[in-house]
Length: 446
Image (cartoon, rainbow, N blue to C red; front, side, top):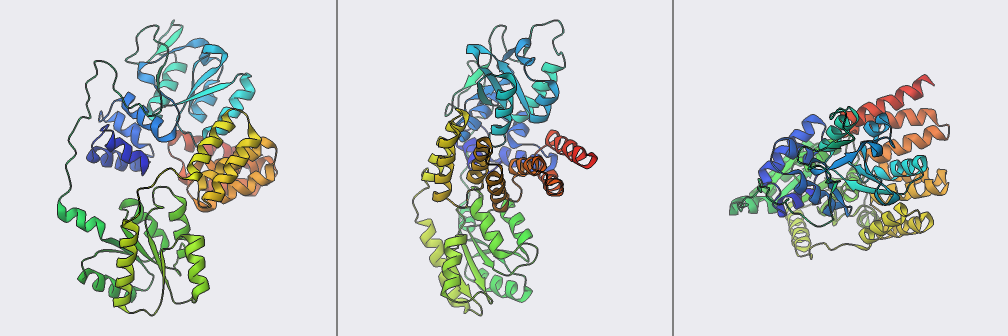
């Protein structure tokens, strides 16, 4: 988790920037999620974390620590399914199955399957993943023997489940705000360094040294990478103010790096200047701008003074942009999700297609379009859309797992195995990895 969710955690004073950074490091080490680590470390309350997730994704949330779940609801979803898909039935109030989920991106197919099996309409609620897994183990494991309900640690008898509407970051009555803090402003020198932090990516050591020396002498904070894979890793660890990116790179091609940066909401606002000695001429420059989102395109050999001038111009022009507002793509994505959950599949497909037309780099839009197309019965179109999603984001676990399932369903067994092997390396937690391993074993034994 990064980008908008991280910013919300700090802006809503749910956790300090230092606590979020510690949680991010722990989540990377443990294969977990940041909100789960914040909760486990006592850095934030579950209610506040759920509220941030709810605001981020536009879904209502549930604070499981303050919820009571009847055993009758648990009986509607088998334990193995709940554990594998990380879902938990909450209630059947109003003739609907209210269901806690951990990942909104991965849940559409799961919700469809539960709706089909139970014959009930589904109302999903976001929960903190770590709390949800703990609740599943306790609720199905008989944590309260002889009881007709399971209760969270802070729940009162007869309290039902505690819902947090999107946009409400509040603490329950009487709960101390453990995350209250005054965010310190960074030192002026630190801010200036971040504003002029550049990542230079080139496989030629001489070019890296030359550019680093020239830009450092002009007041830039320079970091370098020799290939596309290391570049993406460095950007994830410390997003630069600008990237100077060679087109011809080993391991991951420069154009592919640019595509991935534009496909990921966490990095799409980072300006990219491409440089090349191979792809020359104005047509390549225009294609790099339109197809890969490059702000400028520099041909080698270049004069260092000219390179510096162009980098300064890009930095100035992008810094002057208005703060991002919800785009047409984001609006249509949200609309498409609502239509998909309401069972209006054809309208959802149209909404997701409009989202892609507005933002062709959105892996999420391609992923959701694929889910809607699959629900239509357009399996091969769905396959193509899933493939587009994982081309744009190679580590997009929900899309990889859905694509593998579709390959297997249509008889492409080897492609399914290959895709599951990719999914295994990107699984967000132990439960997800175990589920992928089980799918792999089923395919290999079949």
